Image (cartoon, rainbow, N blue to C red):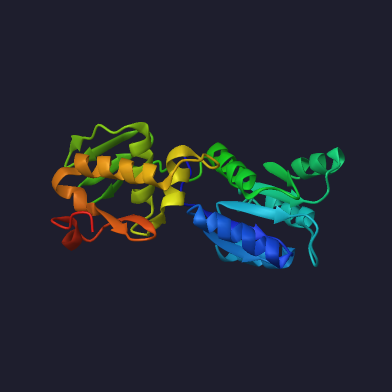
Length: 238
């Protein structure tokens, strides 16, 4: 399941950097960018990311040097790294993995493949899965035991509904696009119509009963879970 995560994109080619950042944001992630290795280290020091997409061939500090420094420091050694490179030789890939990279993508690549590999690395790293139950108003979700309660009563949700509601609750009131919700419910790279998400949301609203107004439709964009008690009751599907 794709959760909302903070991803640092380190790439010195402006067009590719912006394209990657755009697709990750559409997929529901928070994204920061850096144009070289030195800037990347400063960004990591400012705020630790959940994942780093790291180009190898860069000015000032190479991707290999950045990876070495991050993996040698206890505070950053566990940050997952996906290396991006135009070098396709097996020895180059092995070198990247020896430096501690969690995955290695050779340019050129499709955004669908990139999103799928990002999701896979995040899942392996256990990023985005809360160890403690999360509560929003009358809702409480426990991802460890895969349960949701409403006013203390267990909700009977399908797996897709559970993942959608989990994504909305984890977003802390932020709007999630339908594409981001598709990724959360189905996994990156899965093709379904946006109408499919609308049908699942309608089903969740029915199960929420008098609290159905917690899920707000943002026309032309997607959905958000209201954390404002004043909006929850009697707001319908607006």
